[in-house]
Image 1 (cartoon, helix red, strand yellow):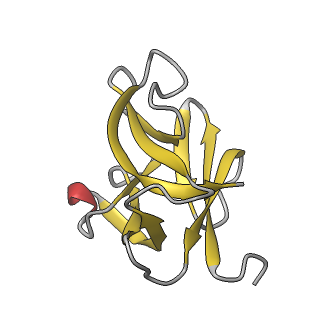
Image 2 (cartoon, rainbow, N blue to C red):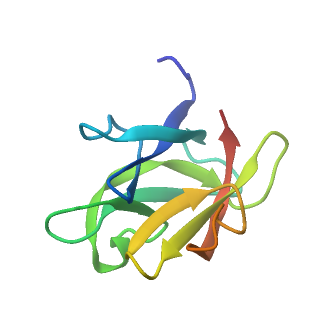
Image 3 (spheres, helix red, strand yellow):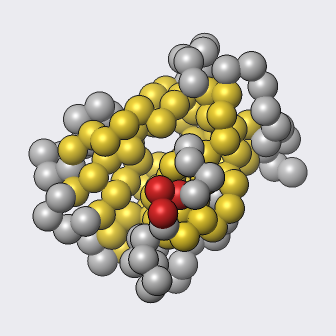
Length: 127
């Protein structure tokens, strides 16, 4: 266990779509960011799930809802802090209304004007 009490949540992209996972990316997806999530629950944490969009799954997003907001639940990823603690950075879920793509970002402005911040998912350790 390279990261001990943590799992690694990664954001990657390919063909204009973003993926977020704690598993290996599909072929051709390039890693862009990484955070550590807790493996086990702790005070002020909640589970995040990896969710696939649609039947063909052209990208994934994260959700704190076990039903993945009526999308396909690929499984739990780990526990994210609900409050900022030392060593953590915010994790925002962002949405591009033109492409339908989702991504996660530590930036409240989602790194680009084409994405809009949907929600603050929580706080994780940026690596």
